[in-house]
Amino acid sequence: MKGDSFPQILDRVAIAAIVILSLVTIILLAGGDKSIPRVRNFSWDNQTISSLDRAFTLTFNRPMNPDSVENNLQIDPPLPGKMSWAGQRMAYTLLYPAPYGTTYRLKLSGARDRFTEPDDTDHYIDPFERDFQSRDRVMLYLGSEEGERGRLILYNFTQDRKTILTPSDMTVMDFQMYPDGDRILFSAIDRDRGRRGLTESQIYTVTTGLDFADDSPDSAGRIQRILDNRTYQNLQFSLAPDGTTIVAQRARRDRPGSDFGLWVIRDGKAPERFPTEPGGEFAIAPNSKELAMAQGQGVALLSIEPGMEGKEPLEFFPQYGRVMGFTQDGRAAVMVRFNTDYTRSMVVVPNIGEPREILRTSGSILDAEFDPTGRYIYALVTELLEADEYIEQPYILALDLETQDSKELVRFERSPMDLSMSLAPDGQALLFDRLTITSSAEGPDLPLTQSGGAIEDSELWILFPLVDSQGELTRPQPEQLPLDGFNPKWLP
Image 1 (cartoon, rainbow, N blue to C red):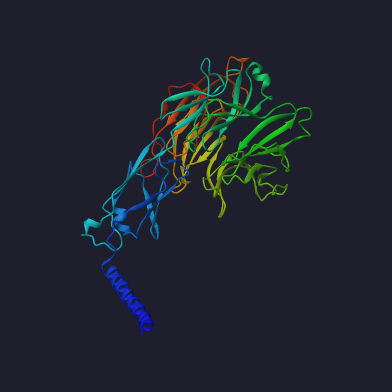
Image 2: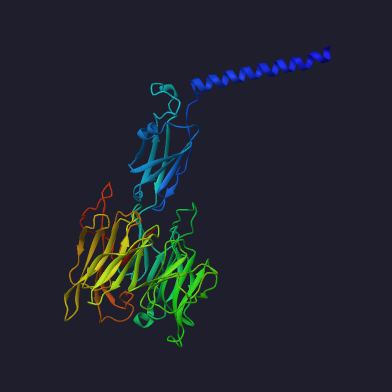
């Protein structure tokens, strides 16, 4: 009998347990789980973000009431954006990049979960506060003051600090920035050679002392040579946006006409010849896998992926002569078309859809950059004043691709064409220079432009802010910076 009763007792215990658990489940479903909701994870917690960081996520410990989160989430200073949900995770996508040089505080209190009634304040979310910051606002330029002439200089606006990166025996000709801000790729000649050394540039990297992705960056000013000039002249070069690939145009010193073309350097490996027909100006696309190059009667799009190189272009854009820039997402490019009436057109060429002319000028198109949202293009162009002597007057223009309006921001007096402008990565500020060029100066005393002109005087200027808090164009007054130099560029 005892053996038969033991299983019966177990059955009763099991049935009782099932009944109790069922009752608890019913109670919980009816009344809801009254534990306090919390933020489990904030993806930008104590992070330094760039203009490429356009969305953060908040992960909660339970399903939330979306309206209560949206109504109570605060970011100081404000960053307009929109929310989307996937289960217990909320994504907040910025409408515009976070302005650089700013520390932000995110706060969330007063939000409730999906099961809590609005008047049940005892079960509102555990208040949450965290900080994050955007990158410092940093520019680079070539110096023109005594002791700084032709040297690469970094100026940190956020910290009000200037750092000279290259030694006095180098004259820097051109430079581009690595995406993490830790290094600069640049070409330079020996200062003592002056104009005679313009065809003898070598390509180097130099550390900036900054690295927004690393808490312990290298010290500033450490130089490493990438390409020498013993056998080949180094002409133009381009650095991939992800920093992994360098493309350089080179010509053999003893027979430049018969051995002229592109070389590719990947991840610090030895340079390799790139199998394509010779061409003109080129730029690497935002995906870092394709190269747009003026070739023949148009612009060719070539693959630079390992194993994918070839002479046949992926795509060919006839009638265009230059690629000026790409949108941040790579969905469109701005190109220059040379017209039969001797005018030039600026054309937006999308991946999908028809090209659209946005500007036609009798002068030149020197530069053009998309803002981070892809809505605006800032262009440095010229107007032909006197056709007989071909005198051009440069000006800077902002074009709104949504409204098709344009605003002239700066007009220069009669000026050389060796001008530069640079749009800040957050789309808030524009740097440009004003130059006085002399053709009579010789030797190493004066810095040189890329075309070999000796710079007698140079000034750095800024336009800020370019857009308001809602992302609409403003008309800021130009301000001269207390720095003398030329060819200014913003760090990414």
